Amino acid sequence: MYQLKQEGMTLIEMLVSMIAGLLVVAGALSLFSSIMVAGNTNLMLSRLNQDVQAVTDLMARDIQRSGYHVDAADNMSAGMPASSSAPARYLFSPANDLYNSDASAPPDCIRVKYWDERRTSNEAVGIIYSHDKKEKIIKVKEVGPLDSTELNSLCYSGSKIMAEQEISIDDVRFELVPGSSAAGMRSIRLTLSASHISRPALSVTLQREVKLRNDGY
Image (cartoon, rainbow, N blue to C red; front, side, top):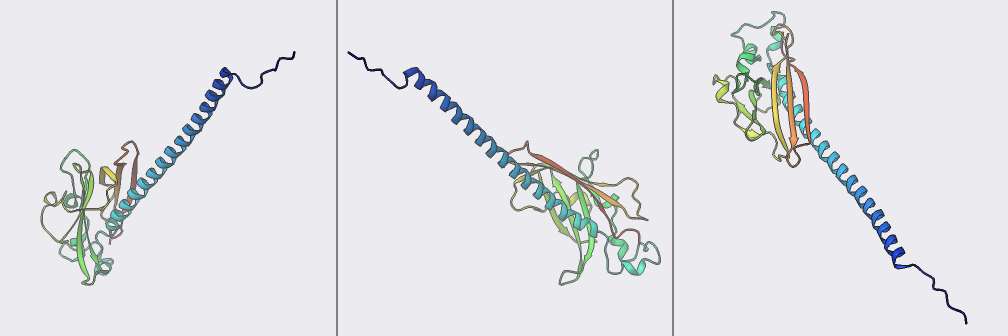
């Protein structure tokens, strides 16, 4: 009599195979999850960089125009204009146009004044940028360019510079570059540090030296 030989997998072999398969699937899922997280992190960091760059560009554009006046060219041959002339009243003054509520810290509020020919009324404007440390946002406020109000009472008010706030503005500094002279072309060192609201560990700091192009005429 012949005895049939049983073929197939034993219970132990099946269990070993299942465990090996689960390990492979778990590894694949872990790799997929890591790729997704890395992709999402890169996307958030890219958005953060774009937002910080856009805000910096906006402030730098106005800082560069500080001191511009339609009559400025007429004063070039005579050197710096007299204090009573129209262009001189729009020149940037570190003593009057930079401020910080904490006297020991770098300025976090700046006022720029210039003549804006793009406006229909062809008028002069004064713009104030300031860092609200409590809300961690940048505020912008438009005032009269020849407003004699002290800057400390004008800073930290106005509207948010960004309507959709996805980033937290951790630090803003407006510093006159050492060695800058009103007789030449001064520069403002603009430093902006920000982080993502939902992931504070993602942060970026951007620094730019902005030339006051209407200086020294």
